[in-house]
Image (cartoon, rainbow, N blue to C red; front, side, top):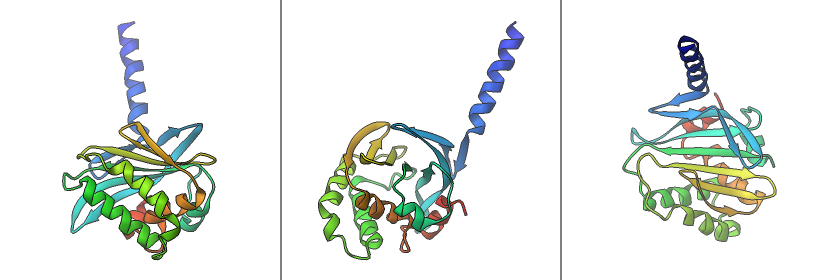
Length: 186
């Protein structure tokens, strides 16, 4: 009986290890659940700047896609998981990167989104440490719901805001070209 129990535990552990994807030094789950939605890992990569890994990111969708524009425009549940891997990331630098990302994503037309960008930036004002995990989810009918280390930080309503936000990683001027390709599963 003891032997059978050990075999069952071993098989269960193998199942758990196969349900994850290694990205840089981070392991991302292959499936995530937010609200009423189950999402699958579409692709992942590492955001680098000056050869320094800043964060690992995974894009989660209901169905895999490599079409960035269709993903940005879709009114479907999706999520970006950011796993901070550098102690160089702090709140001030993250907020600056978010501002730059919206500037690029909207081709400099941030005016219509300013109030929502400010609301979103507030989710990053508390201290950020290496190992922190952010889940930035879009839940249709609810909006962009952000989590830090599993704790809900707040919601920003509007599909238009979601499009600008996901454009940070997937637009024609993404935060990182290699990361965009990885998130699209290419």
